[in-house]
Length: 79
Image (cartoon, rainbow, N blue to C red; front, top):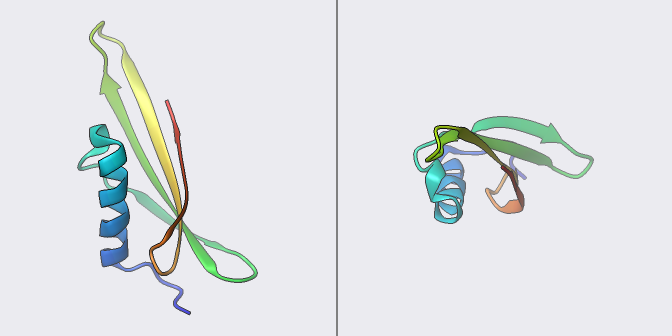
């Protein structure tokens, strides 16, 4: 069992996020390791501020929990 998320895994996760949230295209995630009793998991946090037509802005945050094999276990978003 690996304890590191490779660049290839991060790229694959990014493609999934960009497919679901095209407005985040090009946003690089912050990656943090989370240890559990059974395996290492990784939290990838994507954050962007989008301009709205009325001049206001909208913050969007997408959080992805993945295992060391790069498999997405949970994806949540807030706006």
